[in-house]
Amino acid sequence: MSDSIKLPGPKARALIKRDSAVISPSYPRSYPFVMDHGKGCEVWDVDGNRFLDFMAGIAVLSTGHAHPKVVKAIQEQAEKFIHISSDFYHEKWIALAEKLDEIAPFQESAVSFMTNSGTEAVETAIKLARYHTGRTNFIGFTGAFHGRTMGAITFTASKAVYHRGFYPLMNGVVHAPYPNPYRPVLERKHGEDYGETVVRYIEEQILGHILPPDEVAGILVEPIQGEGGYIVPPPGFFPALRKLCDKYGILLIADEVQSGMGRTGKWWAIEHFETEPDIFTTAKGIASGMPLGACVARKSVMTWERGAHGNTYGGNPLACAAALATIELLEQEYLQNAAEAGRYLLDALHEIQTRHPSIGDVRGIGLMIGVEFVLDRKTKEPAKDLTERIVQLAFERGLLLLSCGKSVIRIAPPLCITRPEIDEGLRIFEEAITVAEKEASLSRVMA
Image 1 (cartoon, rainbow, N blue to C red):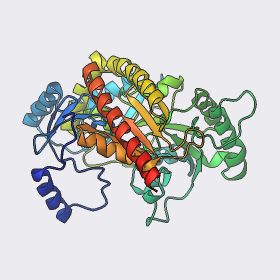
Image 2 (cartoon, one colour):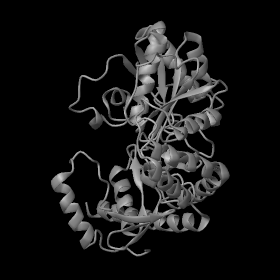
Image 3 (cartoon, rainbow, N blue to C red):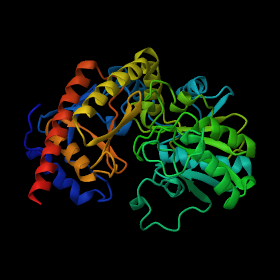
Image 4 (tube, rainbow, N blue to C red):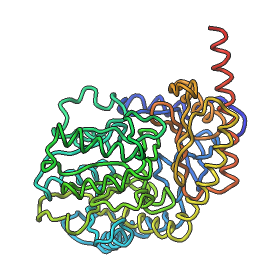
């Protein structure tokens, strides 16, 4: 679907009307897409319109829509049993934990606590860090997104709207600036990269003036910020952060909910920075769309006693079966494709940037890429309205996108994406940018 068409269609409009009567209005719907079915990187709405998917259900559908191997794994497991509570045992739960131990981004043996979502995995990490260290305080980062439950939302600092109406939040969390190379807020010393500057700020200002280091349980951080704008930190950040944590006995907790499971061309984004965390969380891409997450820790850290933490659906057999099939597909082909397709996409987007003054920055690793739009490249003033208009125009032309940060469009397709699909998607993307820029220019002239 290369030409703009009238969306949503009649079937979609009818379903949206029904939805509005019975579904919570809190969901942040981006545009009126009503899905019918999908295959790989293609999806169709209920009116039969075809779209390319460049957002993968917020970086969830790592193997694409309805991959036959994942579908088969779910079907075969469903025929045996769908649920047995976490009071008991089953083989696929154990096999998945063994696999996570094998691919964990640290040398020590890994122990997993299975969850239903990313935010539950984060809540688990918070509780575990407090339990293991006997400390109560934490450091998080501005721009972060860790979930919406009460502990996770306290760390989340990407948009003020996520906090509005919910105070008081969890006690004991102080935020530091995330090292955004495109928008630095701290002054660097000579010879520092900006990541090292942020770590110095944490030690001098937060640990020096606000939190006693021996009362800090953990530092929770996204190796690449997701909702905050697909921000890749400078190379010195994580090695310096690891050194700081070791110095004061603080746990380093990596939130890999969006950046993990091969999205960056490695199992975990933190591996690009040659740093080992003590705890990491995963979800989104782990089971190709089945609701599953995990908090994974070094064996020496997951020291809590029986009954200290638990859940009903942990290790759900359907989700574990999907996850095992997903990991096998990633190992066999999609990890490598994420790295190669990501390089191709980055090069193409940098070329598009040369033709469009509204693109201030293009950044990313693998298939986790952010395109930041600005009103002026010198002032870097965010172009929020333009960004949302581009997302809408792309939708009308058959491309599904999502924004993040103040004015960033994330490029996060399924890891199975092909070169022809990339080329098709980028043609639509650039057409949407061109139309949006012309509309904005005309609007300024008329004003």
